[in-house]
Image (cartoon, rainbow, N blue to C red; front, side, top):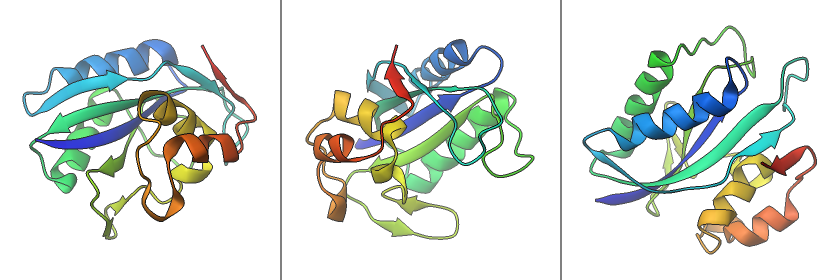
Amino acid sequence: MHQAFIAIGSNLQNPQAQVERALQTIANKANIKLIKASSLYKTAPVGYDNQPDFINAVAQIQTDLSPIALLHTLLAIEMQHGRERPFPNAPRVLDLDVLLYENIEINTPELTLPHPRMHTRGFVMLPLAEIAPKIDIGMYGYADDLAAKCDNHGVSKL
């Protein structure tokens, strides 16, 4: 089994319930074991401001899926929850991102690991640091140090 971390977010159709249902869906997958989930965080939108606030969390899992297979599983879960992609940073029912998978580094058109922008986003780093403060984010450093340094404006723990 491999350790991975997943970012979870929603800002449509009862976002808190969407995040909680996503955690249940992930936990119920035969090839994924949910180890730990962070608290929920309310987050101001990033990139496209004319939309509702998000509810975000991070989950630690174990899986026997490859990184690409995990990504495809997460994309299928998004689709089950009604995810649409009308434009970049659009409001969304559910957003699931692979943040880390073991210490693997991947850079393909389909998947980049570690997630390329995670270290600058408070809505990722605060919940990640909550459940895995000393997880190493490669060349960027440890989660707790990065959480303290990144812009956490507009991010609050529920």
